[in-house]
Amino acid sequence: MEQRLSKKVMILTGAGQIGMAIARRIGSGMKIVIGDKNIGNAHAIARTMNQAGFDTIPLEMDLSSRDSILHLIAEAQRYGNISMLVNAAGVSPSQASVETILKVDLYGTAVLLEEVGKVICPGGSGVTISSQSGHRMPALTAEQDEQLAMTPLLNLELLQPGNIKDTLHAYQMAKRCNVKRVMAEAVKWGAKGARINSISPGIIVTPLAIDEFNGPRGDFYRNMFAKCPARRPGTADEIPHVAELLMGGKGAFITGADFLIDGGATASYFYGPLKPHDSKEKTSQTIENGRQSTK
Ligand SMILES: NC(=O)c1ccc[n+]([C@@H]2O[C@H](COP(=O)([O-])OP(=O)(O)OC[C@H]3O[C@@H](n4cnc5c(N)ncnc54)[C@H](O)[C@@H]3O)[C@@H](O)[C@H]2O)c1
Image (cartoon, rainbow, N blue to C red):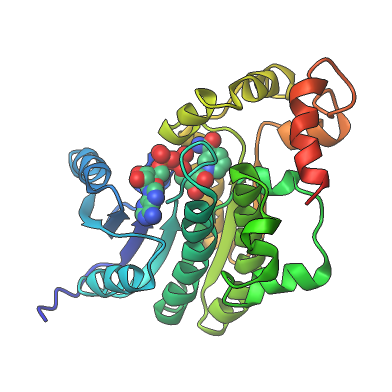
């Protein structure tokens, strides 16, 4: 195989707005290999970034497939050692079935962290995008948390169809799993001198979020923006402020951690006007709460 070793390499999975914003903030001078199931998205982001002076290459890949992940890693290694991972691929509750959400957001993310962790170079770092959604789900048992952190996942009893109520529940479980998985992987990445963290955004305006606004939970989100401390959704360019800290030298003591960036929506959900029993939004949020309390 042709070798073109020279640059540090970043793998970016998910050619969406959040992924591009992070890659633009920290990817100058690197070879950025952009993997996405929708190759059109990968080409579009690659073109935009190349025209802004970045060095990117688009590649079709499916996060739900270990073979596809391994192919992406092998392609990336043709350009040099992998020193950064940005995982911003995923599907939302309004975009996909329970099965797809579990395969992509939960299982695929776990496999990606595991496989990149095997080849990440010393001093390397990674970030995966989880969600505020995982923070709203009630606590699981210590045993369930450990299963999400450390086992092969899809055969787990708590993920079987009868135990997952709907796509929102699947998404929350996937995002909770991301955070637990990052903790367990941080131990393995640490043995290689590398770090891995997660970021849990609130609602950030992207194509994925716009599908949510136009989906069955649209009113729920509009109410959230009206009642959260920031009084608005976030923008993709606000996420790299934290990613830059986590992935650079100033973040050297941070690994296995998760960072909530949600304009205070989660705080308000637990202790403010977004609390389900407190206010007029009771109807829509009680539905959410009812789903959660039975999980
Ligand atoms: N936008 C938000 O409000 C928000 C909030 C919290 C978390 N997130 C998370 O952020 C991440 C990025 O989402 P975004 O908002 O930038 O969305 P986006 O729609 O801009 O980008 C997501 C990308 O993931 C790709 N993708 C979907 N399934 C894939 C698969 N199986 N393999 C490879 N690529 C796949 C899509 O084609 C798309 O290009 C997701 O994990 C999402 O759950 C988003």
